[in-house]
Image 1 (spheres, helix red, strand yellow):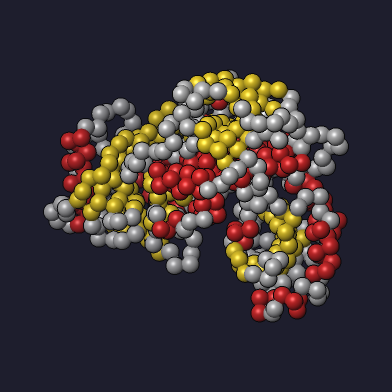
Image 2 (cartoon, rainbow, N blue to C red):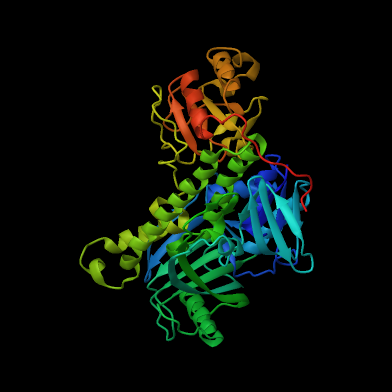
Length: 535
């Protein structure tokens, strides 16, 4: 069987390669560059708990050792703290990390993975599709051709894959612009991110009234100043003046000593590809969408693309193509990103429009602060992971379905579970293996040895039902789950989204839900054409 060809060796492409390797699918990653990323301290990413957990699973590395997990969040307006959130040590919190560090961790993991081949200095030149596979021609020092089962364009904003497939990429240009500086200094707070709107100091130059500070390791910070609409030039002199003024304002005195590490101007665009699939060719990450205004993070959505697509490609690679399952990638992910873009575009006029209702309606400014906090922390319509509520994979007419605190199609809560070998693990640790997860809620099992309850009560009947499912599944047990009554059964997709919750053991409902999740019954005789070799 030919490998999956991935075009682009950024975080999304490498994540997809490792996610496929975890499901025993070989990949070839075409890297246009020399095989490493230049360190840029001012080019960073804020990862929400679900995407941070995804990278930790794939790299086997705790991101806390390479980035900063926020201890809290503070929102200020003028001189007043309008909201402050402190994260408990065991509470999920965003992680701020340099993008070149993410790429380095992923590259190191890929180097140890025999199913991942990275082809450096390989620039895509053309794509040929056939019923049995796809061929990618490359140019450059290592120019050749590669034969694959599928091809995924993770090649960024100017995606060659998207252009070769003639896929339109409409949207808005320069929705927001930010002047960015990474520097090492000492601020009055530690490991807390800050959003400061309308700071009391005044300065000349092309800067608007909003600045964000996010901590990085070793006493470093990334500062972002919102720029007003237009193309005013941000000169080094203007940026240094704003740095000194901002640091002095936060420390109530003279500018503290600082070491400037990196600077730049970050421009946010909002674009959405018309199609994310063209036969055996797919788009993911910035090749498929651009977003990031109001604190939302584009990399998060790109990593979720990879997580969604990996198990579906793996199923097609191992069991033959199932069009409904492969089509669901575009349906699910495009709908979620489109909803995020709509929510952001609807909020922008009120948040960035200056006067208007906030001077008329009491509390409007506080509502704006809450919206921005949601965007930065990954909550609400602006920031929370999307739910696949209208997914074509959602099961229909399950008599035993019950509501729990997690809506159908939304990411599941990361509870402690007992695995089949009796070990205690987190639910997220079992994701991304290509298997469905069946979770029984059984209070009291956590204090008993597995041998005492694995053959008691409903367990034998449930274990038999799980074995009979139309797709590989793993049976897990949890003491509790938010909103789930005792002896209920949850079915979870390989990417961690809830399929359904059932009252008790209902083999027929469980089978129907599992069959719908993998796109329905697979037609007999359908298979993937194979050709030996990758070149």
